[in-house]
Amino acid sequence: MIYNHIAMDIEKLKPQKLWTYFNQICKIPHISNHTHALTQYLKKELEHLGYQPEVDKHNNIFVTKPAYVGFEKAPIILLQAHSDMVASKAPTSKHDFLKDPIQTIVKGEWVYANQTTLGADNGIAVAMILAIFADRSLKHGPLEALITSEEEIGMVGIQNFDIKKIHAKYLINLDNEDDQEVSIGCPGNIDVFAEIPFKRETKKNPNSVNLSIEISNGIGGHSGQTIGQKRVNAIQQIFNILLNIQSHIPLSLINVCDAGIAKNNIPPHAAVEINIKKEDTSKVKEILEHEFHTLKLEYHELEKDLNLRCFPSKTKLLPMRIKDSDAIISTLTAVPNGVHTFNWKYNVPETSSNLGLIKTTKNTVQVTFMVRSSYDHAQVRLANRIKALFKVVGGKAKETGFIPGWLPKDNVFADIYEKFYQTIFKKLPKQLLISGGVEPAFILSKRPEMFGISIGPLMQEVHTPKERLNIESTQKIFKVLLKFLPYLNNY
Image (tube, rainbow, N blue to C red; front, side, top):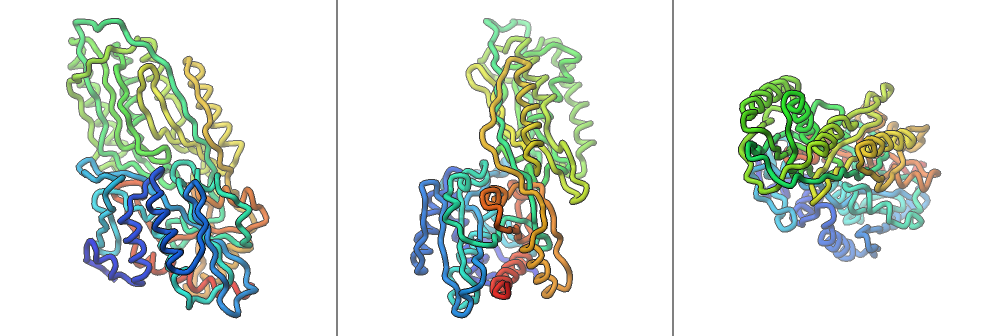
């Protein structure tokens, strides 16, 4: 079915209760580190429905729903999602993620937001949990629900949740992004925070000029799901360009502008300010024109709107010392970024790193990476490579968190879901290892006797302003969930 409604008409979609809950979630600002308001709404709504949700100091919500009469002996199922969303918007958008509601748009077969991330990752899953708890007529065994916070910034919520509260035998995570898939594994992650010190010159060469160089309008994207695609990492590419300029003329960095949306997001924008001799200005612009031409040629399949600008800088900062500029440019060009190893069995990136955030302080350039792998030792090894590279140039780096990988194994629960799915759709879902991290990786590492799966509706371009949620797929996966829960009474 094709829809052509906009804004509030999202609540006319079926099932109405599900879409009404999702729209309500969209109205409440809930980016990472600012989930308290949404947590309070969820708590009050669950209490209004007659439940007793437990909310911890990290804004995690845990709640139980008793079994329908006759289903008391069914296995306990944990439904799990996260409440925070990534904040990304188009350059022309004036949206304030701390104050403004997400403006939903229904167009064709999809739900979008107005020039911002939609937050279907993972708001639609939270809406599904609310809709299930709101319907007392649903037949199912005992249910537990866990809605965590701050998943998008390193799974902070789940790491601080008391796992002992969980008694479920099976886990259904609702953070997958394709209704034809069932995830049985995912990478873990390590965050690496690194910095390189610098000193500034005592004065500016009077025969020099300051220039700003800016890469913008990259498509960005989720550093798990899209890390294997040809998407420009604007931060690393701008240093690639600087290194090429350096091979022809001397330059000094002045400033590395703050860039990046989140450590788990491919940065679509980056900018630097440099100091060069006046007579080298035309040469720099010539190199930039060539570099941008080759960049567009290489990435033309996806990067349709990529832009590069060079213009005079009005900064009053003095240039960095040449040797410090060299260290910063060389390191950020050489540092591992993108896919490191590939899992051919599951046809998915297995180990990767993302240079996600960068900023300049008074005397350091600071960078944040997210390193992912299904294998814990591979995460550590790649993180150590990054740390060693910064150490060589007099910088330092440290790990700031660790989530173990969720390796595929014989999974009786996935087999049950696969059999059920086939009875409805006459085909098997794909059991697969995904390249983005989901919270079962942490939960199952603490509860290895549990079996878990991750499912969800079709979404595209998550973590970008082009994020969209497929309507029919959402209806399909919700229907599957409602029918799967009573089916488990047989097990």
